[in-house]
Length: 285
View 1 (spheres, rainbow, N blue to C red):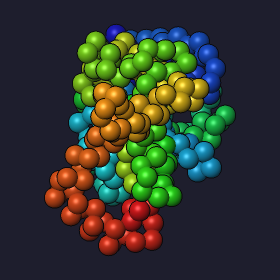
View 2 (spheres, one colour):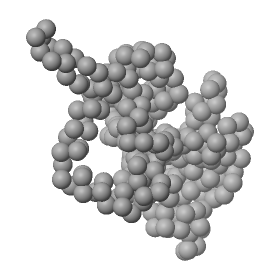
View 3 (cartoon, rainbow, N blue to C red):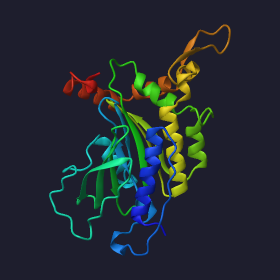
View 4 (tube, rainbow, N blue to C red):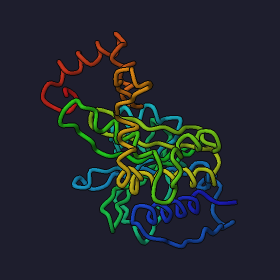
């Protein structure tokens, strides 16, 4: 059985290969000598990383059970960040897992979540990776880009959709739909916020989890939309003609989605309130 330490080592190697843009071979070993209090099932492995500020990109993951609270808090992992106000007990403390491609910055135990946290920095890319381990069968991974808009034309939202319309390795037109139908995912989606765009996957099956990461990582770093302008037209907006005698009409996935948003009184009220509170930053656009 894989130990918690072995699982984390494997995940760090996998992430290093994905972010670094190269192939890394690694082997996961086991040791019966490790104590039961320090062992975790592979289902508890998760990770979160943030690339350097100049890159404007984040790669992160956490327990799916805490996902909704984490993504809403942007880069905040708990009310005390990595400095818990309550000292962890000896049983809660877990030794940091070393990997040749990462430097260990800090370790901590987040008492509020019962999570063991290790902050890494990727040597090649400058990424800061926060690895969290909890007693949860779900494994969650996400990639987040900083996408502060210049105006309200919806470019980040269109790009969010366009990214998931095929990639260099997965050339299918709509891998997102195929994953929804054919994978063992427990969560699969993407979100556009006023200042960031998040691509998130989760699964309880280890093999499926790594496959989801593979598809999403290739999608965000090598999207088909770069070389195919029709992707942007399909997801953003384009003109359609049903019949020769009919007038041209606007169509598009995001266009139709936002028509629904702007017809909702709740959404309009929230937008007006947000723009009033934050008139001078991305939340007020």
